Image (tube, rainbow, N blue to C red; front, side, top):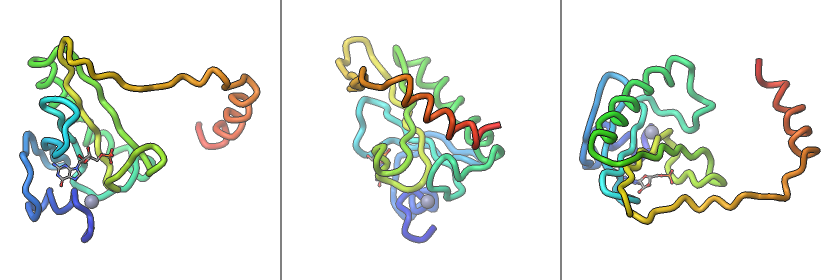
Length: 136
Ligand code: 5GP
Ligand code: ZN
């Protein structure tokens, strides 16, 4: 896609620090890392969000995610995998990407998830009724 930063990175039109590449995926260091070795794994095919991927697209990408994860876990003490979809969920670049964030003892980094104790059974029931129509 013409205006996509990540498509430009894949084509080499924008420089990046590549750490891994295969037929389907490209992996490179995040320009604004959360931690040392923060890697983005992206499909070579431009797809905006995970729901737009085919099963095959995702399986192909998974090979790269697995390889990079194994590499990270040889060096780091832990690993967080994160994937944002749509702006409300924090997606800034509209090309599917998985954040692979190495974790180190004492790095002090915390996912700031605030648990919503106000979620009711009724709300979950309503959600599941809608969800059931789309899942099989
Ligand atoms: P999002 O917020 O969409 O889940 O994450 C997008 C990520 O892409 C951010 O962590 C951001 O630092 C990274 N990023 C955006 N533009 C570039 C770039 O030009 N080069 C690299 N290496 N990373 C980028
Ligand atoms: Zn793209």
